[in-house]
Length: 369
Image 1 (spheres, rainbow, N blue to C red):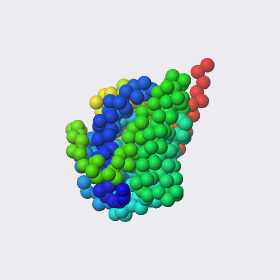
Image 2: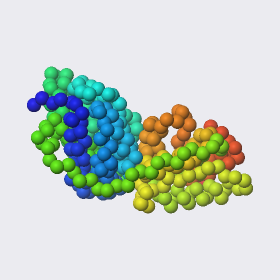
Image 3: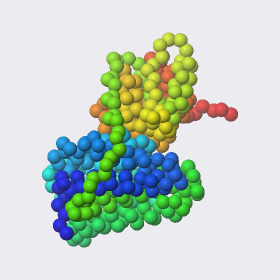
Image 4: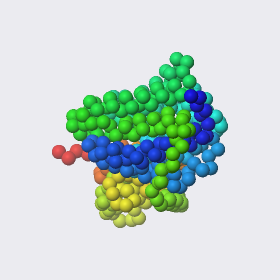
């Protein structure tokens, strides 16, 4: 079968991926319930489904912009670590593919390799860590090897899908070294990694996109999703701003209240919270984080304090796509509560961005015994 890597191919890929994560959402969530937060399938279903509902690819005129549009949407709508990670995969692929109307098989291989490299940097993960990389890296390698051996695009896509599925299965006996599952230690052994499983679904969808007849089924009916609100405009120049990014709305709010109380007299520095999901659940949401960063920005820079995991990934992903000057927003490598208090006191006293960041990070050395 001859595969043409044009706009219609990538539209079929997105539609096939949407169908796959929708139909397998319960399966992915069950995998995540064993070693994660039990929301992986639901989050991906919501993200891909709302992308279809919003028609984010309707105006795309080339494969690159199409993938970029879906990637941005996933970053903005999918909770947990999945949004930043899958958003990075598609955005990076879109950037490498560029504006060419038809993609060469070699360029698609370069896009896959670049996407995997970006995910590895973002999540600080390597093969064997029991993450989505265990499916994506073998897929990219198998695709490149098939082309190097003289295979066609169809051959390479088939090899990539087979390698991704095998890589996902190979995570079962591994002990997780990254992500939420790593907190379980040896108890993570014996379970398939949900990120690797969903990655295998997406690579398989990429392979199946080469068969128009297979993809000629009715599109998935997406669930209704509200459009994300626009970020608030930045305020006038002033003190360094602070943003607390937590998986819990209550934790972020209580920490902010404590920090404000300990600032003492005078006007406290702007301090915004991005805690939990929009509906009040546990998790992180890119839209909430983006709005908090914008609201806290008075022109002198912003320091973000994150509690763990996807909070850090979400902020890092937003910074990678932001138009603000490099270094304008900094993530503090600091304990959440102590760092927030130290940063708030220093920012409220008029400290600059470097001083506020240093104050937060110095809190790592506070001795309690």
